[in-house]
Image (cartoon, rainbow, N blue to C red; front, side):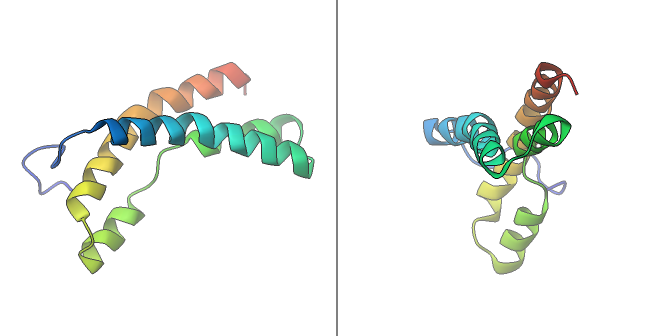
Length: 98
């Protein structure tokens, strides 16, 4: 990803914005629901919710590059996920008062 001239190699579409919203809103909500169902409470529940809000790592990009399956799209997704995910994760962290 560092060898690219621009940070994003493809356009940001409405689908991408909706996917990011699903990742950072629906993901923690589903994690909270499933954690409560299995009986997690307190700090462990809060950590699970914050962890669900964290952006995806670099590993998916490495696999996409290795198998040549849309590495440009995934590169953009990883970069945007990191840029958007950090403030959202911090917001979840402060809202849950860990």
